Length: 331
Picture (tube, rainbow, N blue to C red):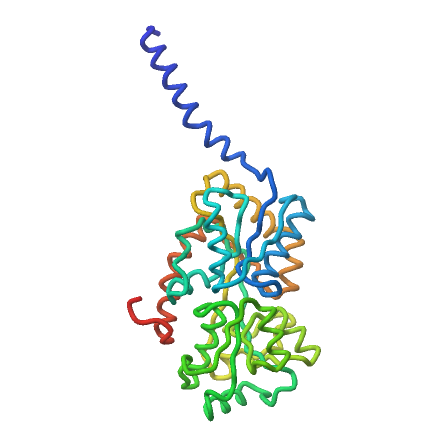
């Protein structure tokens, strides 16, 4: 080989090492300090429960030895997501994500959407239930329908944590199906599921729209009464006893998903770390046990598939919110 070719080969090798070294380092990335699981709502609600379950499994299994749940409630999750946005490029911060991120942007309650972050995964899905207090005179969904048709302002409705989220969508779907304008109903939006549940049990609101996780246990205690679930058909297991909204004449079929996202500008190796970590979590017996306990559907998507799904979700959510009259056409 000539001297010129040897020099060219050497230069190419140096350039190749320079290009590949950062990628190799990134692919070997793992946390070197405490990971924060940021929740944009108050303790006690579904996003908070999800984060705490994940954090417990992380620590008990050694998947992520050092992690902590950090609640940043307020402004329909926006305070928590704005906090995450302060840590651009730092994979030690991940936050819960739900359809509220899409709904907030479409409803004009937040300037943030998924393109401001690094979507990482969906780890579970869950349906929504319409519930009243255990001693409420409203015994069935038919009772609720009759009362709302008689006087749409006679009952107050509550949900967490933001207008346009899954709870709001199911509430609006039901109301529209019985001929009621969702915008003309007394509605109270709470910063978390915990405060909303307390308000319902205390008799401060009449109807609570939430996940079945806590409501089923309260129904068994006689403290709450579930009028219907937003599934297309009866569920299996203990939830099989819950009548669907659909079978009772309301085509309110919808589910939410829950997962995590990181800040913007995460490196490929850092995303790969969280892909591998959450895939291990999703396949663990600890996670399967918790999903059964919490009534979560344990199907999951990792970062690449999740990002593609989000593009679809935006258009689907826009169509639903427009149809329900919650946003103007073309927004």
